[in-house]
Length: 207
Image: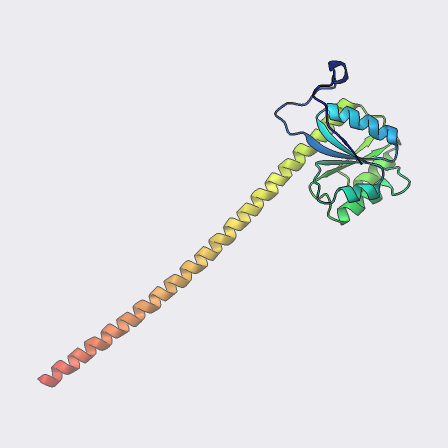
């Protein structure tokens, strides 16, 4: 396992790739690729662009590393031999290990078939090597922004559902309280009527 974070003291010549805003949260990204050189290159470049990058050399290692550890993005090479990219994504999702993460499948093939395969399998995006890192960065940040918006909408809907449920309970309790008050009033009226009848009876008896 490797974990890459940008070194704040790194010389200027090594950090020219659009450094991230100091106030923005660094996005957590996992790169799954059997090629060590490819992993190292993408880790170095994306760490300079404001990502905290974790590397996994195959799908089994990635699944183990995801236990109890949240990520915003998971990039997976489609052409891995030990556990192919699509199978890796399905394994991770089936285990519920990265429900909040966006999946990006990476391929060295320039044909549309790999993109169709990735998207039909449920990937959020498909990218072809070699990388244009500015474009890759823009697409990754767009995915994260969309995921955050969807998450906010989901939370808002859940809050509305909870409020509606609470209101329904409150209305139900109010109806029950009204029924009890009506029953108490009916019992009181009945008692008053019985008392009135008893007074009338006693008065008539004295006369």
